Image (cartoon, rainbow, N blue to C red; front, side):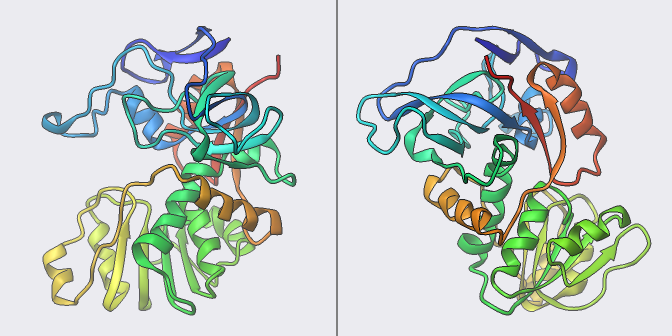
Length: 317
């Protein structure tokens, strides 16, 4: 089969489209014919050799490897003990995340996945759309409902609202009748309004204002502490990426920082699938590239200002 592999750490040019052996499903696994795979930040972190992580705690990633954990496709074989899936089922999922040693292999024509990491693809979604959901959608879902426990009618601010995680945070918060303020650049105003955002702040022209119960920050960075200005005492700030939040100052206001590492969860993905099928949420697609053009897709990711997700289309054989 064809796959994209990394033989040496570096920029997008190290992604090599080549022939590799077809994998076999082990006990509890299924073999999926991949129709589409999605780009996520951990893909380029791994490609670069996790240079963003301090060397003393930097994980090791054996070479070569195939990146990618978000897939959508069709089950073509099942391993021993699998009763939840049959050949021909259309599935999507976040595969083996956050495992590094036995991680996903999404940038490929076929991959294996634990049966429990998959959900049934909604019939109303294409494979490209479904592949764009798992990591971003589960991150938003787990932050809102597992880490924060969002109650109905709360006020929420999403920083970086047009990105992969951000646009799901906006929509999932609205399912809880939250009042949502979306922060992004002006070009995303109409997109975020269409997703249900109640207020919009163009960070390129307007400062933060207001007071909210919960902030979800998908941007981070050295100026993240400025978000404290809009959090009510006793509220929360949930960082998706590392930032400087002046936590000592936050503690004086009883502001806490609930967060956690996204992980594979087929049952939660089924919940997202129901919301997608009913039209309560939808997925934004920034751009689509053929699998062989994975380097170009990574260059698009590096350019930033993404609206939704970047997807790799895997051609049918």
